[in-house]
Image (cartoon, rainbow, N blue to C red):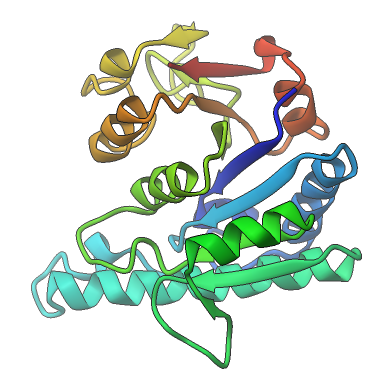
Length: 235
């Protein structure tokens, strides 16, 4: 039985059809899915992106904003999303702690791995924000890094599709789902799972990456319980 997982949500997913901002109905859905895991004695950590507010690469595209500054702006966006997720979790009665890689004492705790592990052991959900705390690294890399640090047994990347495909299934009818991939296959330029830095780190730590549809109710628990038809597995 899996005891500890890290779930990675994209910032864009929080926006829903609006494409920007935070949809509170989606927040509530995410919180309910996490509660189902907690109720089944699974320890849960969360990493969330910030693309619904700002993406560092996009902000720096025309050179007016330096890439380093743009990436810090993106990290701040993940803190905003992290606060929102923490609030949604507490709204439904869960204990949650926000830990940021960038110190913001009035908003959340600083990231301390031993404290994070202790929170998890006590049944609290830990929301990691601020990315890695460094520019040039994605929140996918932050997810793999934090999962490795807290000894999670898997990373669940919750997306808008039910796994990894050879092409975008929303655009191409001939897209084929790949049920299992090696880390090397996942780093292929034509396969979009996570960035290569995060995949390489997962490989080094023998950390499976599970890609699934976040919008299907009950998916997270079913996958953790072994239903591999609902996802793709990189290992």
